[in-house]
Image (cartoon, rainbow, N blue to C red; front, side):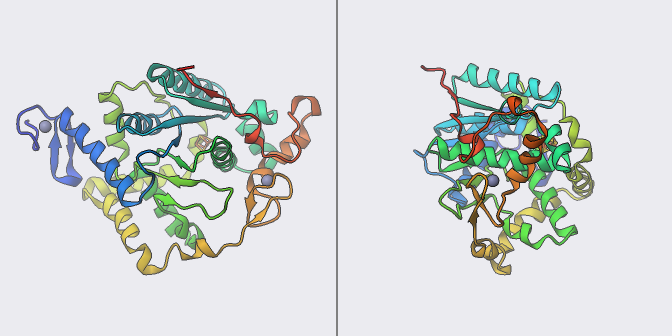
Length: 328
Ligand code: SF4
Ligand SMILES: [Zn+2]
Ligand SMILES: [Zn+2]
């Protein structure tokens, strides 16, 4: 089969949701175009603005880093080492190898070194699910490290499947507060909060996997062992079933939500929230103790003092984040 765009080279990927099938070169062009459209439409960052890219070692985040670098943006990666046996070591090694091969700067934030235990220990001590603890601590680290290093924006590798699954979950449980915050670009609502953007929201998981293969990106294929209890996998499976039956459903579901957001007044609620400073770490929170401190404090208290790095006052991630710059 010949590519439907250039009509000369063989097809590498069918894109039923766009009624097309593309060769490797045209698919590459398509991916870059989709990311460029996302960045421009949401004014995610300017051409000369440095971008911190949150990288897990998976296809999406490494694909995103590769894309932004190719598109000429000034990027630095940030990787959170979660301390999950085997999986986290592989993720860190893969991320470091990617950065080194491209001579891109990388910050590695090791949770176990910082708090005396990784995500599973934190989850146990705070009686949360691993994913809840992990998500809270990672978001905190991306924000504080970004701010400490002078970035105004953090980009994550969330794709269309992630965002559609999140939307479905929020709707199923009528999480109106979360719906109001679901956007590919979250502006800063406090001097201590950096902007958060998702430049891959127009691309599917399958497309990002194809991009990683075509670009010969070595990524961690194994899912995190904690993901078995993530509801998002069930939502993704349900959406994939609908997509198979009717291509374009997933894209319509999420992109139409974004189109209708301003009409429904969604997004306004987020601006009205009053933020206080956490009594423990000083970071913005709606309550008195922030979510991050609620997750890490029980572990800190449960561990012998000598295994935990003490740092009263400043936020955890503010302790001298190390940037590995391959040019220096
Ligand atoms: S599956 Fe859960 S624990 Fe694993 S990386 Fe994702 S959020 Fe963290
Ligand atoms: Zn082509
Ligand atoms: Zn706090």
